[in-house]
Image (cartoon, rainbow, N blue to C red):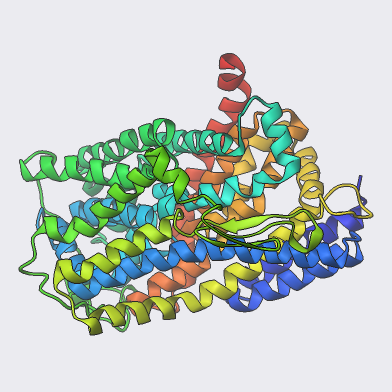
Length: 580
C-alpha cells in the first residue's frame, strides 16, 4: 500500500499537466515536457526506479508516439492533398446541394462529413476542416465551430482508423501485469480483448450518440436563431431527419465494431449512413416542411463572427472542384477503405506486412518492414513500429495516387506536403512527451522499485476505493478529463486504460465494460478539449472565444456523460451479471 504523500506524488504528473493545460492555458508543447520531467523525478527519487528503466520507459513512449505520428502524417497528407486538388470542395458541394436549410446542412456536413473525417484522420482534424466549410456556406463562425465539434464526437473512439483503440487500449494493456490478467479471463490475446472493449464502447455510443445530430441542431437553432422563435419547435421540425441520420449511422457503426474490426466503425457508419440519408433526402423524404436560416447578417452578435467573413472560403483550396464528379472526389477515401480492408482481412497480406523477419537484425534493433527495439537497455521492454501495416502507410498511398487521379502539379503536392509538415510540429513535441510520461508511470509497476504498486495502480486503487460501487458511473468522466487535458482520445486511453483496468479489478467489475467506458469518455472529452477548440476557432478567424465554446459544449458533455454513466452502471451490475 502507498501512503497519502506517495499517492499525491503519483498523481503529480497528471495534476501538473492539468493545471498547466487548463488552469494556465499553456500549449501542450510547453506543459507536457514539464509533466514528463516530474514523472521521471518521482519515478527515480520516490518509486526507486533504476535510471535505465526510466530511460527505457521514455524511449518506449517515443516509439509509441511515432506510431501515432505516422498515422497522423498519412491522414493529414491525404486531407491537404484533396484540398489542393479541389476534391474536398466538391465533396462539400455535394452535401450542400441537397438542401440549403441550415438544419439539414448541420446533419449532412456537421455530422456525416465530420464523422467520416474523424474516422479517416482524427486528432482534431474534423472540427478544423468542417468548421471552415460551414463558414463558407454562410454559417456564423461560432455556430460552425459548435456544430463541427458536437457532430463528430460519436466517431472519435475509432478515429484515424481505430488509433484510440489500437494504440490507446491494446498497446498499454500489453504490459505483462495486464496481459496475464486478460488471458486469465479467457481471452486468447490482448488484441482480442481490445476488440471486445471497442465493441462495448460502440454499444455505449450507439445508445447515447444517435441523438447527437438532433443536439447539434438544437444547440445551433437555440443560440444562433431569432429570439422570437422557439428553438425546440425549429429543431422538432427536423427531428425525424436527425433521428434517422443518427440511427442510420449507429447501426452499421455498431455492427462493424462487433463483427468486423475496431478500425472501421466510424468510416463505415458515416459512409453507409450518409449514403442512405442523402439518398432519401434527394428522393424528397425527411425534408422539413419549412425553411430555416440564420437571422439577417446585420442582426448577428459581434462574438458570432471573427476575421473571416461568412460565405467566403478561407482555405484557399485549388483545383477544378466545380467540374469534378462526386465519385472522383471520393475515390481516394474509397481507396483507403479498400486497402485497409484488404490488408486487415486477407491473412497472408496482413501477416506479411507485419513480419519482422523481412529485415535485418542489428543487436536488439530490427530494421526492415518492422522497425523495433527488443529488450531496451536490458530492461525487457520491447516496442516496434510495423510501418507498412500501420494505417498511416495506407493513407499515404492514396495521397500519392491523387496526383495522377486529379492531374495535380508537383507544386500542389509539395504544398500539401509542406502544410502537413507544419501541422505536425506541435503534435510531435506534445505526443512524445505525454506518452513518455505515461510510460514512466506505467513501467513503475514492472521496474525493480522500492514501492510495490506502480503509480497508475496506486491511483486506480485509491479512486476505486473512494467511489466504491458508484465507480462505473464516473468511469467515462475520468476518460473525458484525460481527453480534455490532452486533446486526444488516444492519449487519454494511453494514460487511463491501465488505471481503469486496475480499478475494475479492485472492485470486481467486468474490466471490458469499464475500459469500454474509458474509450467513450476519451471521445466525450473532445467536446471541451482546449487544443481542438483552439484549432477549430483558428480556422474560422475566431481565436479568443475558447471559453465561450467550452461553456456551450458543457451541455452535450453532461448529456453524454450521464447517459454513458447510467449504461455503464447497468451493464456492470445488471446486464453483464445476468448474461455472463
